[in-house]
Image (cartoon, rainbow, N blue to C red; front, top):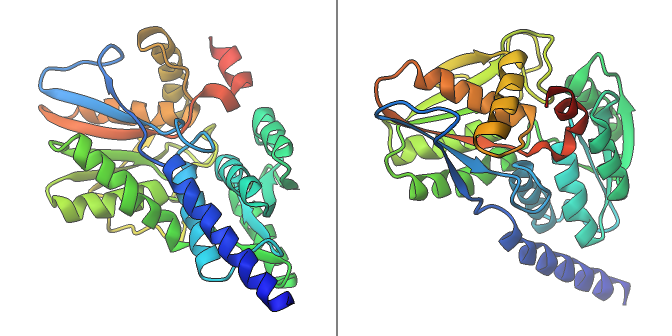
Length: 312
């Protein structure tokens, strides 16, 4: 009887996770017209907070969870464990809560207050790690826990899990290509690198002339949570250094300036990461004579009220 019940539980869980797919992806496309304008150059951005979990990380979190359930690696008797700077953790916790799965997250202690409060409200167990080591340190702690308690945890490992970038390969890129068939450039920041890697790989396969521009902070000590400064950080295993046609740098200050400008010109309150992507897109737009640039806005300002209140 226990075996039959176990099989029924697995089938029920798989059915439930499949039903959540309609709440992930298919985010609206926003054309930047007032923040920046230049003859023969267009900038478009995907509003990624308009989906389950409130950020771009919903795509990766959903795909990682679904594939783990389908492969029998994750069920209601195991705890989903991962390192996060916040957004992926929120996406995990949002999805897992609907599935009845427990979540434990290794989170740098300097993550924003709003992120911590949201994770706690969603019932996630938070394991705080050093603020000085960022997500690199959080990954070390998560890996050690997974190795010590292999039967207790399913270690999602978003920085090495191919289902991270594949989520964007099969969804984000196709949405962009359908919505902006004339796209000439795709530009996005590097955190886990899933968004850039998956979207970039598929866009190149669809049209090899599309230019892929990766963005990174301009210095090791920066204010862009979750972003990687490639020369000094642990480079995610899923990142392919041969994929980008170019790597550009963005300063925290330029991102903060875009936050202020976007609130006035476009009426959108966005996060530092979203603003950094836009700052990079504008920097690129200033370098070309014509083209259609697409980026993503990972999340809005809801989880960054302390920063936003200081800026506005």
